[in-house]
Length: 321
Ligand SMILES: Nc1ncnc2c1ncn2[C@@H]1O[C@H](COP(=O)(O)OP(=O)(O)OP(=O)(O)O)[C@@H](O)[C@H]1O
Image (tube, rainbow, N blue to C red; front, side, top):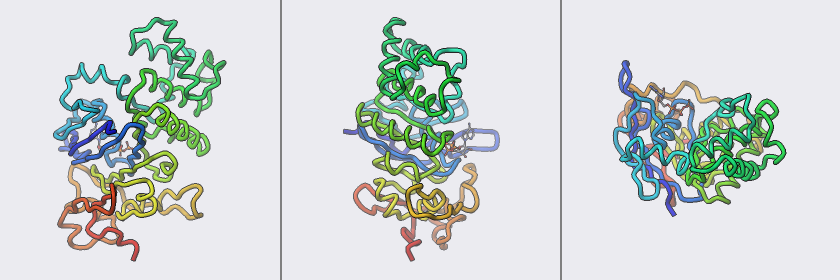
């Protein structure tokens, strides 16, 4: 059953240098219990997409057009007050490095209980009970609940942040680079935990990352973003093994899978474009090895490659020869 529907979302930043088209006509859906990976290099619009869903954009950021439905409610049409009431209870976010925001002089359990009290009408005692439940849910040892942040490892702190994000049983959790600061083994444990939680709690999960190699065991579907647009979307299998867009191909080679064939990472030359003046035609053409005249002139539409698999390229699969 569908939980989230993002339709033709355009979010721009209005700054003195011009208009940054950070999210430019993005559409996708997410079902209950499903995990969608949103992947692309830094500056491609992933965080702006997440902040648009949560309506947490800074003053210069504006949803220009499009709709974001959470169940039947169009989030773009809600007042600030109405959306505030839904944060934490319906949608919650785990940010990169969020664990550094823990208060160093307050017990971890108290901080989780505080998050519960802040968003639910419960007594302190009830909140402490809930904090204990959440502690168990994120697989932290119960006797650690009275510990302070400096007694927790990075992975344990991130588990505590996940516990807070789950405090009000949200329907949708968005993790923005939730494991980037952690070492590879701990990263895998946190991703496994998120995977287990979304299945057990039947919540929708969006995982944002620049590293396509970490999504394989967690996501059902992956959307690849480049310069404010989704350039390829499909099942994890499609994206890993049947990809059609040269950018997906390059991303996979830039971050080889830890358990895959041994291969040197091949960085993608250049950087994503300035989104005030994005390139004409296909936005990836200046960095694409397969670009031809039409790529400079015409923006490619989405071409279907199979059930739920689509890509935006004039020469899909060109890298195969
Ligand atoms: N407050 C802002 N004002 C102006 N431009 C912004 C603002 N925030 C983001 N941008 C621009 O919007 C574009 C998309 O940024 P966004 O942070 O969404 O990308 P991202 O893919 O999440 O990258 P990262 O992983 O670095 O956060 C970039 O060109 C960025 O410079």
